[in-house]
Length: 410
Image (cartoon, rainbow, N blue to C red; front, side, top):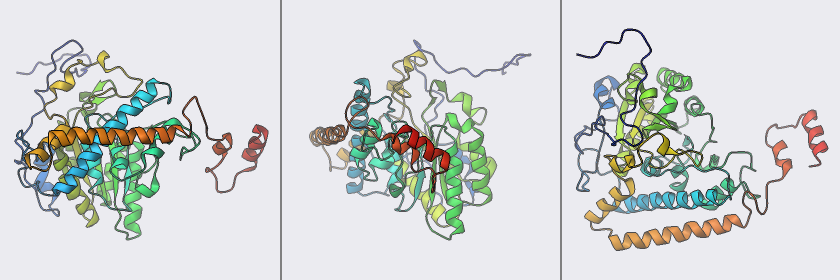
């Protein structure tokens, strides 16, 4: 019988604290290939149970099994592996650059590379992502120049955003990447609004919104689901459940819902959970949801079950709130290693070729870094002009800003 509390406020507690033994027994992992793949036009009421399972394609032996397998060729998977390896190498170099004082701030994607890299390959030119700060894989997999990403991180004279955004808060409209906002939650409503506008124009472009598990507690998340479900907006709403909202464990934001995907059920949306460390599963589910949106069947809510291996940011010390060995105990493994092993099993990749590819990828990232640093870093070299802060806000600059610009001498 459950304990009955008499008075007092109930505060959820994490399974383990620093110094304890990592415990992921609450993460129920179904057998790979065991979750059905419903038709794209399925009635959401018929798949309510999918909000409580996890769609997986790669089994423990590295085989692709079940009804969600087969959406990608070997060549496409090799390309996906390179994208994830590139993002990981990019992270390592930019993390080091921050420690060297070349930029003020950085956020890594370690362990979450498959989510954004695989999803990007399910979208088409003209679609728009409304991301958080941990979806740089959308740019990497979309062939956005790394040099431009680094210029933005360094806030140098070639920064596409003229030093007006916090490092890693990219914006690339032509690559389907809406400006990142540090106030998380707003991008979910923006994604739905953009998708509604596309539908009003009778366009076939769709939007994708991104949010973390912690930000699902924001009111913007719920407002987005109201509009997405009411107006059948052509949008895919993605929740990246990496187990941690900065230093707060996921149980605080999830409440009594059981899963984050289950939040979509009350709005009549199809809600799915997917193994976020399985590149093949992420792509298959993304393709299903994207097709559904493009057919005019409305929004889909997807929860990616993954794990944030690194710190929240360069300003965070995760050892203060979780065991140092917790990432080693994560039961869904490393997305790069899992895809690598699958490709080796298929006979199209080898350990030697992987080591060679790691060296090639790192060489490319270092070359891009050297090119970006020619334009300056945080404390050395060229910087954006102070004049830029007055530009790009108004179509016609108001008199008071013209006076301020004159007074500043720019």
